[in-house]
Length: 109
Image (cartoon, rainbow, N blue to C red):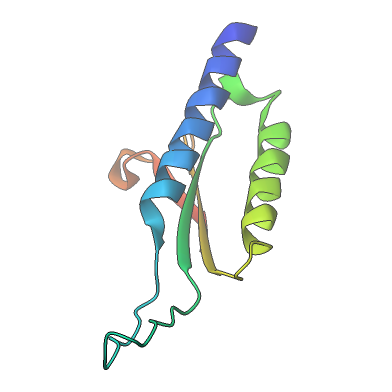
Protein backbone atom coordinates (compact mmCIF):
# COMPACT_ATOMS: atom_id res chain seq x y z
CA UNK A 1 0.00 0.00 0.00
CA UNK A 2 2.81 2.40 0.88
CA UNK A 3 4.55 1.67 -2.43
CA UNK A 4 1.36 2.63 -4.31
CA UNK A 5 1.23 5.99 -2.53
CA UNK A 6 4.87 6.64 -3.33
CA UNK A 7 4.23 5.84 -6.99
CA UNK A 8 1.25 8.27 -7.03
CA UNK A 9 3.40 10.99 -5.48
CA UNK A 10 6.23 10.42 -7.96
CA UNK A 11 3.81 10.48 -10.91
CA UNK A 12 2.28 13.69 -9.63
CA UNK A 13 5.71 15.32 -9.30
CA UNK A 14 6.69 14.13 -12.78
CA UNK A 15 3.46 15.61 -14.15
CA UNK A 16 4.20 18.86 -12.34
CA UNK A 17 7.71 19.05 -13.79
CA UNK A 18 6.41 18.28 -17.29
CA UNK A 19 3.82 21.09 -17.04
CA UNK A 20 6.50 23.45 -15.75
CA UNK A 21 9.00 22.63 -18.50
CA UNK A 22 6.37 22.94 -21.21
CA UNK A 23 4.97 26.22 -19.98
CA UNK A 24 8.04 28.39 -19.43
CA UNK A 25 7.83 30.93 -22.23
CA UNK A 26 9.90 34.03 -22.86
CA UNK A 27 8.12 37.36 -22.98
CA UNK A 28 8.04 38.98 -26.40
CA UNK A 29 10.93 41.28 -27.19
CA UNK A 30 11.29 43.96 -29.82
CA UNK A 31 13.42 43.01 -32.80
CA UNK A 32 16.77 44.82 -32.94
CA UNK A 33 16.99 47.65 -35.47
CA UNK A 34 20.52 46.69 -36.52
CA UNK A 35 22.90 43.77 -36.08
CA UNK A 36 24.89 45.62 -33.42
CA UNK A 37 21.97 46.03 -31.00
CA UNK A 38 21.17 43.40 -28.38
CA UNK A 39 17.67 42.17 -27.84
CA UNK A 40 16.26 43.04 -24.43
CA UNK A 41 14.07 40.29 -23.05
CA UNK A 42 11.48 41.02 -20.39
CA UNK A 43 10.48 38.75 -17.56
CA UNK A 44 9.58 35.17 -18.38
CA UNK A 45 6.02 33.97 -17.89
CA UNK A 46 5.62 30.65 -16.11
CA UNK A 47 2.21 28.98 -16.30
CA UNK A 48 2.18 26.26 -13.67
CA UNK A 49 -0.67 23.74 -13.30
CA UNK A 50 -0.47 21.66 -10.14
CA UNK A 51 -2.51 18.45 -10.26
CA UNK A 52 -3.09 16.96 -6.81
CA UNK A 53 -4.42 13.41 -6.34
CA UNK A 54 -6.99 13.72 -3.54
CA UNK A 55 -8.16 10.10 -3.61
CA UNK A 56 -8.30 7.97 -0.47
CA UNK A 57 -5.03 6.29 -1.41
CA UNK A 58 -3.28 9.64 -0.86
CA UNK A 59 -4.81 10.39 2.58
CA UNK A 60 -1.52 10.19 4.47
CA UNK A 61 0.50 12.03 1.83
CA UNK A 62 -1.68 14.95 0.71
CA UNK A 63 -0.45 17.41 3.34
CA UNK A 64 3.20 16.54 2.65
CA UNK A 65 2.64 16.80 -1.12
CA UNK A 66 1.01 20.24 -0.73
CA UNK A 67 3.95 21.49 1.33
CA UNK A 68 6.46 20.26 -1.26
CA UNK A 69 4.46 21.69 -4.16
CA UNK A 70 4.20 25.14 -2.52
CA UNK A 71 7.94 25.00 -1.79
CA UNK A 72 8.47 24.53 -5.55
CA UNK A 73 6.11 27.43 -6.31
CA UNK A 74 7.94 29.68 -3.85
CA UNK A 75 11.29 28.71 -5.36
CA UNK A 76 10.03 29.59 -8.84
CA UNK A 77 8.66 32.89 -7.56
CA UNK A 78 12.10 33.78 -6.19
CA UNK A 79 13.95 33.02 -9.43
CA UNK A 80 16.09 35.68 -11.06
CA UNK A 81 15.20 37.40 -13.26
CA UNK A 82 11.86 37.53 -11.47
CA UNK A 83 9.25 35.65 -13.55
CA UNK A 84 5.59 36.37 -14.04
CA UNK A 85 4.20 33.32 -12.23
CA UNK A 86 0.66 32.09 -12.84
CA UNK A 87 -0.40 29.04 -10.78
CA UNK A 88 -3.54 26.92 -11.02
CA UNK A 89 -4.33 24.10 -8.59
CA UNK A 90 -6.44 21.13 -9.70
CA UNK A 91 -7.61 18.10 -7.76
CA UNK A 92 -8.52 14.70 -9.17
CA UNK A 93 -9.34 11.22 -7.90
CA UNK A 94 -11.82 12.38 -5.27
CA UNK A 95 -15.15 10.52 -5.16
CA UNK A 96 -16.92 13.87 -4.66
CA UNK A 97 -16.02 14.92 -8.20
CA UNK A 98 -18.49 14.38 -11.02
CA UNK A 99 -18.17 12.65 -14.38
CA UNK A 100 -19.42 15.89 -16.00
CA UNK A 101 -16.29 17.64 -14.73
CA UNK A 102 -14.07 14.84 -16.02
CA UNK A 103 -13.36 13.88 -12.38
CA UNK A 104 -11.19 17.02 -12.15
CA UNK A 105 -11.84 20.27 -10.30
CA UNK A 106 -9.95 23.55 -10.47
CA UNK A 107 -9.38 24.61 -6.85
CA UNK A 108 -7.58 27.92 -7.44
CA UNK A 109 -6.33 30.05 -10.30
